Amino acid sequence: MKMNINKFSKKRNTNNNQYTKLNKQFLQDNKFCQARISPECTIYSSEVHHKYPGKNRDKYLLETNSFLAVCNHCHRMIHDKLSTEEAISLGLINKE
Image (cartoon, rainbow, N blue to C red; front, side, top):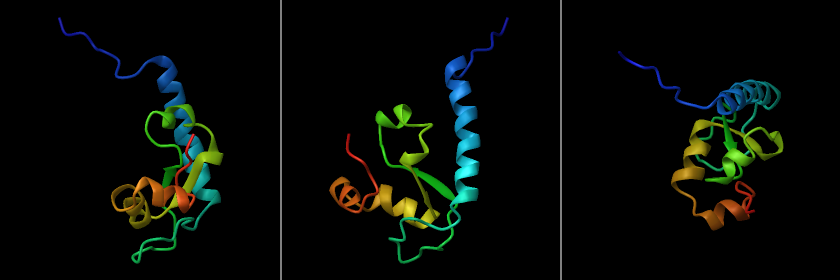
């Protein structure tokens, strides 16, 4: 007999559902890229960047004051090209 195993706890599912709604509303309210650091910046936001990385991301998952509306190009640059120190100095990452 095959058992279904939940991928997430009920609490995590609730948080994920709330986050999906907040994310969608945040991008509707913030249509323009707030980073504008990539030469390929499209000017229009399409993703939400979380200013608290790693383990702190879950702690601040539902706090929109930790969100940053960004385009895909700037988001990749934040995560793949900038050092943590550079991202902090640009206000793209908050250090707790």
